Length: 282
Image 1 (cartoon, rainbow, N blue to C red):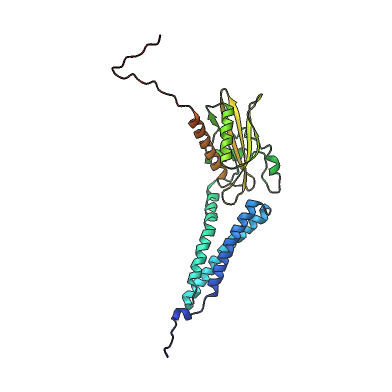
Image 2: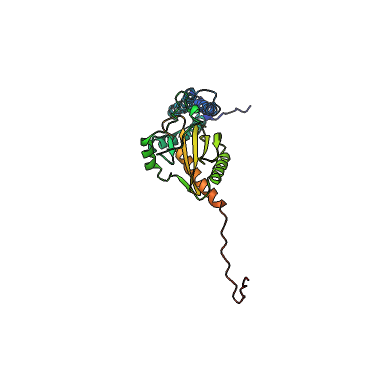
């Protein structure tokens, strides 16, 4: 009878540390997804939802440490489990990549949460004020001169939008752009007499976690033209990691593009063809 030989590698024991590293990585990934769903759909208050998220990140870090210990053990005793360690490291890299990027942004960008095109007289939160009165929410009152100075240094391009369009046309363009972005409109008032000041208040969400950031847009007449001022403010946290400035900048660009594209093209008078007689109007 022929003897059956098994490979020496298959006879080595499986590293329990490698298994723990993989299991912790999977758990952290599931916990991150659950915490994001909790925040986006409001199943819990902000603090316990964030505690779940940071707990998941801590599990990912612990998984890396256990994986390193498992690698050292495998190197010494030749046990199996490298595949599980590599899988754990891959999952942890996916889980920690975006938070690591946000950490770099936190160190680089100013610690402000309230961005506006008009720091002297920023658009107010009226309908949105009651939504910012919860526990831990930022005030509906503008953040102040320190925030304005930090904004000027970091985002000098954010200024009032001056349009060659009447207030009603500017209001319609802005309202269409807000609807295109699927922001939740809380209040809208077209620019009607006697003041002819239009106002739009809406709630935007950050792309991944879905944190609520409030937006107030004011359209005021400037002779026959109009001026548009925008304010975007995070409802929670003292630093927005640049999200409000990015939102305002993109909206400014889209408003200018939409108004410019709607202008009628002026036709240049055609030069008469050589040798063709000009008609004289009688």
